[in-house]
Structures are given as structure tokens and as C-alpha cells.
Amino acid sequence: SQQGEEDPQALSIQEGENATMNCSYKTSINNLQWYRQNSGRGLVHLILIRSNEREKHSGRLRVTLDTSKKSSSLLITASRAADTASYFCATDGNQFYFGTGTSLTVIP
Amino acid sequence: DTAVSQTPKYLVTQMGNDKSIKCEQNLGHDTMYWYKQDSKKFLKIMFSYNNKELIINETVPNRFSPKSPDKAHLNLHINSLELGDSAVYFCASSTGGSSYNSPLHFGNGTRLTVT
Image 1 (tube, rainbow over the protein chains, first blue to last red):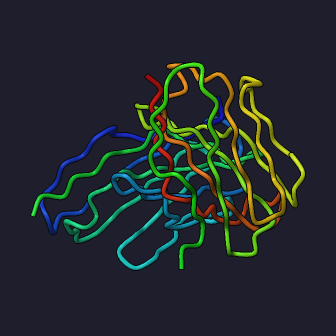
Image 2 (cartoon, one colour):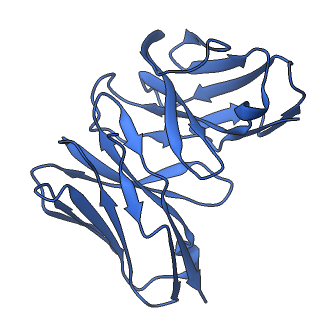
């Protein structure tokens, strides 16, 4: 399947620590996007990285992309309790393909 | 102002009934989508419309019928509801029909429970 697969499925850290989530995919892509989903809400777009980019930053977020390994990582630095959510990667094809997400819990 | 709004937020109904979910976006986007999120949080596309025309129709039972009266609205009608239809349904929108460089904007979902 073309969908992204996030790893780990669940992650629990203390406030202030960094959180790293990984995404693997199977086919070539034009871009990869990361989304956040708070409980009971819709997904919110965080960042898009194009296939010719290796790293991108947005505030406390850092995304890397390795097209040779077909993988991406999302790093959240200095985590906060408000970062508690599920995080999804989405790859493009003729549509967006999502995985099942990483559930992040940040303990105050 | 809510960018992508869908109603109702919760929908509880019995097997065999017919129900509709409505979606509206005020972002001026050309493309709208319906996604289904199951209990394991897997998010799968069902339909995509660009300027009122169907462009993606994944393998979905024909009991599901999308309708787009204009490019700001995409409704989902479901006939003869089954237990397996229980899920959270998300509406989303984006700019530029076949361009997948633009992010999706999601509504807050409709939790459908079929009993």
C-alpha cells in the first residue's frame, strides 16, 4: 500500500523532553506532510516537505526526509502538555495517503 | 469563523436507516474530500470533488453517495446503514484539484454510531 506508516504507535514523554516520530512509505513521492490530531478534532496541517528537500523547520518542529530510505521523521523539541495529540504523516500520490498515526502523550 | 464545518457532530442511528452528513467550507477551495477514520485511527479517503465534479471514488459501497451542490459544499448520504459504517467521518478541503502540494483543511468530524 502507498500509505505512510508511523512509528512508534505510542510515545509518552515528560514535558520539556524532545519527541521523535518516524514515518515510512513505499512508493516515490512529490511531497510528504505531517498533521496533528487532537482528541475529538480534525487533523491540522503542521508542515510540508518536498521530495527535493532534506530538512525543514517550523518553530519547535523539525522534519527530515530521506527519499533513499523512503522515510521521514518529525522532531518536536521542548515538548509541552499541549503537544499531546496523534501525529500523522501523509504522502501524495493521486491523493493523500495517511497512516494510523503516533499517539504522543506529554506528561506535565 | 470555522473554515470547514460539518454537521452533525454526533449521529446515532439504527441499522437500515438512511442518514446524511453535511459539509461546508468558506476557504474558497476548489477541492473537497470525505475521509473515514476507523477505531484504530486509520484515515482512508472515500471521495474527492473538484469544482463539483467527482475526481476520486475509492472502493466504497454504493450505499454511500456524495453530492456537491456547489464547490463550497460536499454532503454525504448513506443508505441502509450497517454496523460496520460506525466510524468518524471527516470532510476536508484544499486548493487546486490535482495538486497535492497544498495542505488539507479538515472539519472536526462526525462520529457515526450504528446500533
